[in-house]
Image (cartoon, rainbow, N blue to C red):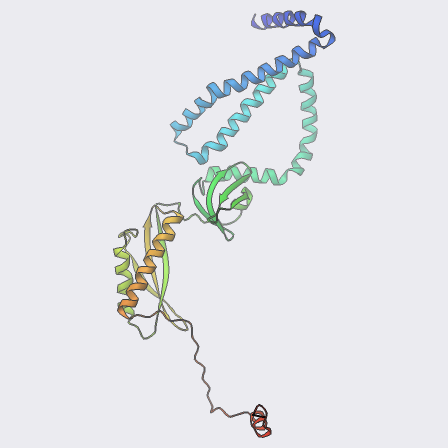
Length: 305
């Protein structure tokens, strides 16, 4: 009944427009029906489907990292359904069948041409499901580092700490090691303090621990610790291990800088030196003046004129 009424309405509109458009009447009416259905689908998505999907995501507790790709998928599916319905309503069923045949024949060629795109799309799905990082996380990979700004189906956009925007193919981030220092609520920092071989190791260790305990940015649990890790050419290496809470790149840099500065100042006060690289040159036998030097001296080379 409804479909019959719609058909009658279309015929009535066509009859009204035919005196003005002539042979183009059918084409114009079909195009108008197509546009009306597409616009109605878009309005329906914005007014009803998108808010409903948003409430569903809220109920599931999905964060921004997961919302964006799912929202894009839903929007694509709704638009695809709307365009398909528009073709049917406008009487373009024959065109749809032809389009399906062409699409089937072109699938193989497109698959070969879009190998990289498909590879990155699949990698984007893995990033969504595995969640190695989220928007706002600080990540490091292949010598690069920065904060994740956006994750799409094909690429991930990362803002470096020099304010440069890196557009990284998703496959690059799933096929190699990605370091996420802020994945957990705490982060351990390590720093090696080098002291002179003649300095008191126990005293230096005590200073390093005390300065860690005085810092508000460093956690008491796990407690700061120090290990002797190096006997280098010119210094004894004491590795400090401290923990900070709810880390970010800014917290990491500031906490470490303030801590190292405080330890350096205490070392200066206590007379503990941080030596610079040096070399001691020695020989097993007594050094003898080369004969060429003696010959030059006898000849007066390099002397006064």
